[in-house]
Image (cartoon, rainbow, N blue to C red; front, side, top):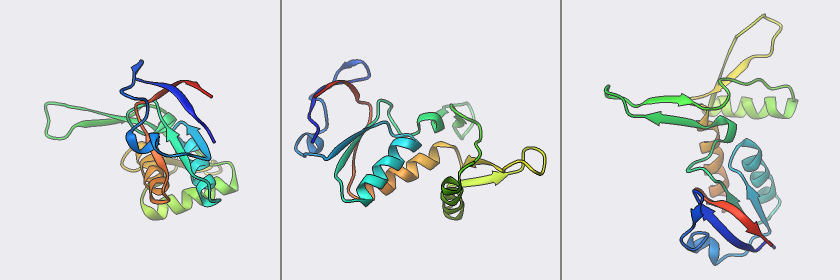
Length: 155
């Protein structure tokens, strides 16, 4: 089991480290980062009966698939992806995952090059939609997530 000794939020000392629910629980694992890799790891561990806490330094999930919205003078805020603009799948397992996400409306494919190229994929309506869905999956399995936390020391 992991024991978090000290944490900071946005570079400043956090109120009391983790939220009250996380402080009162023990976890088999602590996963650092709520991007695709961290959330995939969390989901797999939970499928194998492990309890866990996911800690993310940003205010939301995403990692390389994060998005941002800014206010504009128009009615709708302007949303844009901060990381990659699109991605491909080279591994069969990831292709299967993309197919499942496509069926659920999390991603869409488009042709971006010669016919022999792998299709390119984007999150719908933004790339961060992928990890937001993954967060919901982890929470649905009983996982605990803490955002806007930075681990400065663990033991």
